[in-house]
Amino acid sequence: MNIFVAKLSFDTESEGLKRVFEEYGSVSSANVIMDKFKGRSKGFGFVEMDDDGEAQNAIDQLNDTELDGRTIVVKKAEPRENSGGDRRGGGGGGGGGGRW
Image (cartoon, rainbow, N blue to C red; front, side, top):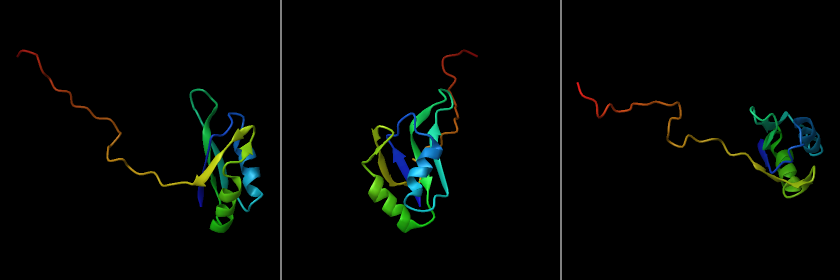
């Protein structure tokens, strides 16, 4: 199960997040999402646990608890959905106003 963790301290690192969740079972991966321009945490991350029962227990036990001085939000990650817009850019501008 993929778990979303929000309201993380900017000091929380992926390895620390993994250690916390390992108290509830086997963790496949843990990643704190970093801002590539600022070089610091964006304040959220994801934890992957193979056993759904262990993952749900971790969610139940860790949601609304304190980690590194912040009260965190822990819930099942929802799959990203395409909001209907293709964000690859595009363009078309219209050529108005000019004379031939």
